[in-house]
Length: 87
Image (cartoon, rainbow, N blue to C red; front, top):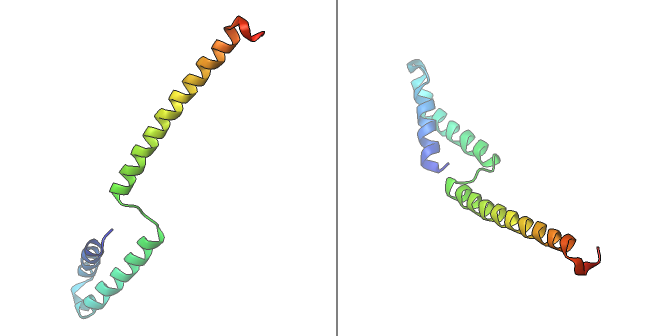
């Protein structure tokens, strides 16, 4: 989450504070922004773009693994049925 989104969320939280304590809204907004940024940083989140890239890599890897497994199975079957192997 970028700084603009964090600031906007902090502003909305500060604006939700009752009007009677409006004098501390700016302080609350800054504090909310700091707490939100710190909390989100600890979550070790990735961007949607990074997630999509890794998903595509995983899909290609999974497809390659399935192809290799099928090839291995064919080789094993050919070895069992091949009379020249002595089995």
